[in-house]
Image 1 (cartoon, one colour):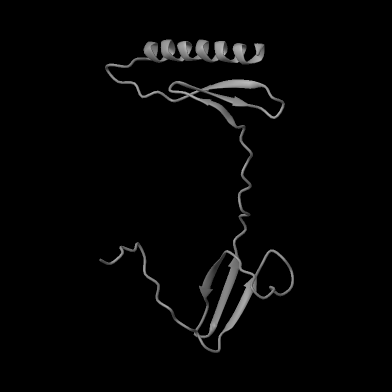
Image 2 (cartoon, helix red, strand yellow):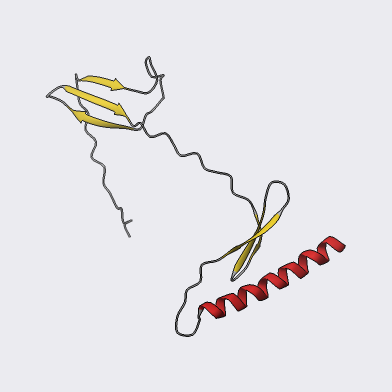
Length: 121
C-alpha cells in the first residue's frame, strides 16, 4: 500500500548560472550553511536569493502547570507563586455561564484546600 503525500518534489539542476545572494550577514556563506530566502529568476541564467528579514520567533518560557483541571489550571511563577487560569468553556443549552462559574469555584476551593494541606505537611 502506497503512502499518501501532500506534495511532490521535482529535482532540477541549473547549470552555469549567476546567483546573487542578498543576506543579513556580510561575506560568503560557510559550507553547510542555509538561509530562508525568496528565490527569483531574473533572466535565462541569472537568479537572486533575498534572505527573509523575519528572524525566527523566540519562544517565551511559559510557567509550568501544577494542576490541569476541567475548568481551571494552576501555574507556578519563577518565584514559586501559584496562580489560577480559567479554561475556555463551551456553552450550550445544557451548560451555561453560571454552570461554568459554579464548577470553577468548586475546583478552586478543592485546589485551595489541597495546597493548604500540602503546606501544612
